[in-house]
Image 1 (cartoon, rainbow, N blue to C red):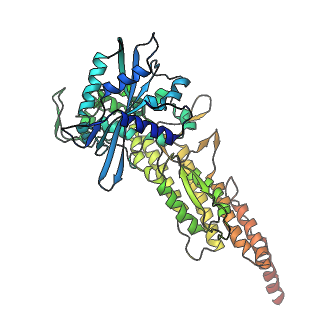
Image 2 (image 1 turned 90 degrees about the vertical axis):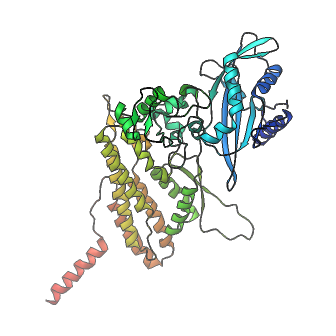
Length: 509
């Protein structure tokens, strides 16, 4: 067993785990030459020999995890690992145990196989491991004359958990719902911030789990009824929400509609980890948008903050280091971090609204239409002749679309007895959070400020005479887009010229 350093770096930890895996003499199965595995019984026995539990404890908890990754085109590798959770009581974990969860001596790789992260491949390559899990859960483990009881929980991201439960895996179309809400705002959804909050059973309240693996017509083994379509099965029991549908599925068929749960665990014992999406789509969108609006590096951070309010993701500007003789970059390099929502996952999440009543469903569709209109207006190309007039028109359109979006979204909210605003089940599945710390976020004001900053670039390129007229135009436009509605004002210089022309014509007459 390699020595453990508490403050070891991530790479050092990986190296130690890899060294331990090699020291355990992994074997290749005769019936499956693409699988390299280590006996679960052997790993746990060695672990308890080197790190025995205290005398008053005989309960051992292990967490079975897994993940897959594409190595090259048409080549995928998947691994299964376990974490030994020491001094585990119920479903709570102390700070000391949290520190030990990431240590090399509690994490062990059990199996590596050449295959995808889907139900069929996992089932094919984990036959021996699943038998060992069943035996250890039933009979326990005896090491150095002590009898241990072993309980198992399942871990991994939502894609892995869905795969082992014969459910459709996560993708950009159906992402992990916990990735769409930042951790600081989870209390707004009513979710508990403890370790137990991310069980598969609790996630069913927020997740849409499509079941596209069933073949129809299908006969239920419990009630011997035949269903011609998924809708016929749902209409028979008439569950009203996605959570009720998942509960109905678990009660009648176990996890997975018609296939066995590979680990044989109940959803309460399946704990999903938080994911982080790669924001390549957002990155490309922002890069193109910066080029269209001719945004300089100095203005990019303010622009990113404006976009963050609209698309609901955390983005920042990667500042280029200054090098001797290097040319000044005109375009900023914008990168994305820790996804709350991406533009392309908004529309599929509308299926969540089907679980609420019809009125709220139509309201939600109205909100989604307003958001799409706002998004289209934000990323619309101005064209080569983007003059001051076209920029002012765009500012007006963005403000109007943002106002429609906010108004439509507020209709989804409800007001409790004490006057505070809270949300329906599907309210927080939209990308932009209207209510933030109890205050209304006015997108239109930020849109105006953003376009006002853009005009400063044109202002620097003008002559002194042009700058004077530009200041007058900016004063007029800014006053028209104040918060609280459009204030009708007149361009005083233009009005004065018209008045002088009218007097001149009267004098000629």
